[in-house]
Image (cartoon, rainbow, N blue to C red; front, side, top):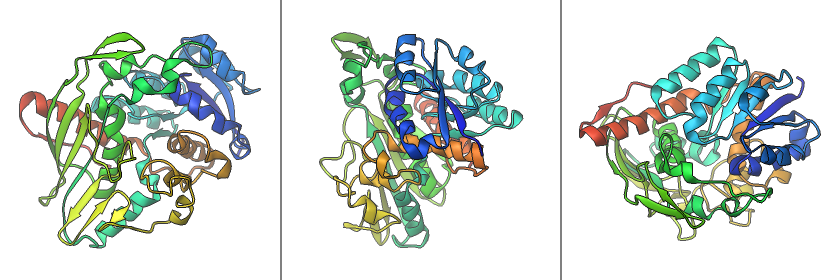
Length: 383
């Protein structure tokens, strides 16, 4: 089991946050950072300079032509994911791709087929069912701890999250990392960017969705980032109604403002709420009291007390988060990358599958179609 030689597609915010994990000794023992590509080559060079084995490339094609690279992690804008994934898979590289894997079910079908054709591994973020608390929620619901499940609610709101990120105001190279694409098509809007977390957790816990209907539109057609006006193309205000069968339903939202929260200090709460005939799960609370899950004693030692369902101590209990990683950012995405690393090096399949990602993509795609047509849409994919 040699080291996996890994290339980074993009040197923007997400990969700037992720790269420090690969200088930690336990990761450096199994992964060499071999390449970083970005159209702003100075940005790629700055990140590559941190690793003796890394080269900077001005294009993805140039990096994929390098036989030294075994695998890539794709951190480009969502609207480019399909093109970049397909190029990497076709070049025979293992792939981890950030959320959302692509924007249509047909694209997802093609990526899954390409990975099989070229005998490479494809891992798609977000791996929400890697989180022990989501696994425990599924067990409690399946065991009848809530009685008969009636409905659930989950989602996230855009707010000014991306506009306020510090990297948007100036990076290591003195330039700003432009967030405009978050508001453009294809791939923009809160469903592809944030609600995708909720949908992965919700469907991992309850299973595939059978039908979806929705209301959707653009609430804020104009935004401003760093004094620059942005015309918003993507829908930023969507509410979905999901049918899981047996008269079990869920509401999932991706909105311009307002979050379903269990605590006032939680910016995003992706785990949602589950309502049964004899109880309720709200985030990390069962009927108002914290429930135990594997590793919760570690999570509760974190500065946040382990009360955030998606950040802080809750991420400390992911499989690859040793102590040196805990102070770094984007722990959940790092974990997803390491799922791909283990699968490629050791043959251990990950539950963060492209098939699960495809089902979530179909939910989003069919929700937009239902909102446009006024007709509930039946889903065809499973995982």
